[in-house]
Length: 336
Image (cartoon, rainbow, N blue to C red; front, side):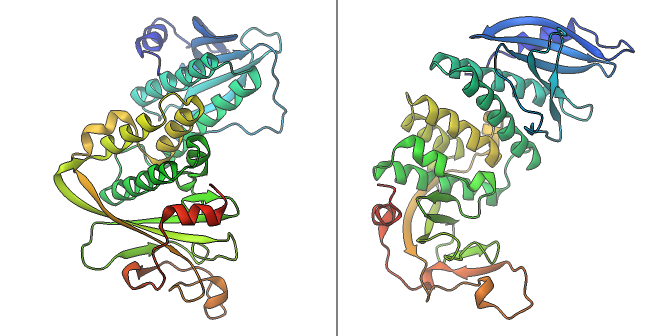
């Protein structure tokens, strides 16, 4: 659970980092287990920051830290003793409100990991992965999802639920959901993958293919396409309802819950935007087809020489192949 924002806002308001010499002013906040947590400001730019101190763990110089459009992560040494501190710092152009939400969420993720008994090494990874999810969120624009992206996310959540219902462990299923991380396909399971396409169309199933590689089973095999058809209706669920359904499915599985939150962030979904998704949908039908030689597709080996990139659209309703269902697909993938 995210920490309350007033913890950070009150501390930042009481500090000034306007000294001309580089340095930090900071106020201690409740710790996250063995980790020291401070709200601070960096001089001379007076930037708000959250500093997290790790007592024993170290990072190598080569370890890359995430950086987004509205924030940066840097190594700090506010005590001058060489101990590892990571500072999550707002950039001048970054939204103060959004940065506060990010700070609350990142420190809250550390609190939750501490409650599960995570050691320091894992806490560093939790910090970096959660900040990395925010990096993806801000890279996508930090605004509410477009209507097309909203539909796509509902389709991916629908398939995620189906994968778990078919017998895949929740943690493995959500870790396999790599679409929000710009994976080539939406789910990478075993040696293969599942690409999800979602439509509201009742006549035909238009599916946009983003590259020559997306339906190339020479890269991952077996490869399946799952077509999720939705119907807009007043009695259905909106996007926040689908999100809550997934959270309830994973309730009590701390690692799966944490991964789900990170994937949702990376996909561009944030709780504070919930009221911007009033449309309600019902899941009408799903079709899972294996991509074989006669599947309609363009790949690097099936286009004229000289074509390097392509985006195209197919009609999944006209794609040959039986609906094998998600359970059969998962067995072929070795996921269950």
